[in-house]
Image (cartoon, rainbow, N blue to C red):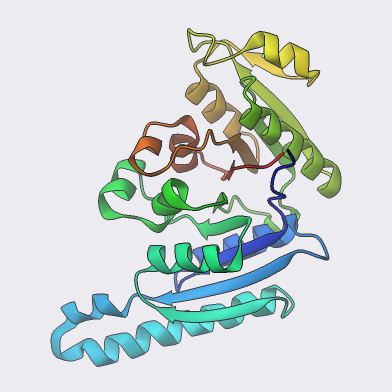
Length: 262
């Protein structure tokens, strides 16, 4: 059965930090002329209650900054797509709009929180990785953003999800002119970590590493702009220990976690 094209309908979360603009810039690099785009700015105005008598001014300032960031994002996108300004908890709002829009990829900027902090504080990127119904891009800037992505790596372990990630990486590399490397880790210690027979049978050309999967992919991430990993469909608390979720938080480059892409 055919899977989902991750580059069909993009949703980008925008905040006042500037990290959302990295997400927009990078999704535009992925997009095609027929790709759809929605830019979503969320005001967490409930947080201003902690400001007491200054709450009204805090909300006005926060919302003005988010609206300005939305304007910048739309300008960056060449006034393509739709912009939405909503109020509420950012993670809940993005999940709801992703479902309504039928997003095939949700993109958020990274605020460089460590994974443990993201889990404890309910960070937006963490929540998207756990619960988004589609592929997720955690965007990080590494300089020379106009040329993103110049290089791509993808993890391959023989599973259907990883082979799908390899196919998407190769297609994207051809489309944007980026170097692509497929990495298979042999150091996991079990057939579930790396199915060598399935990899060989697939016909894809991979670079083998003797390291464990997480270590091998983090090493590959040091020298690329974008790392693709396939998700095996874990959600919520079950996703906490997954390699794809840990990679997305720890890699120094942007990470695209693919769900249902074939």
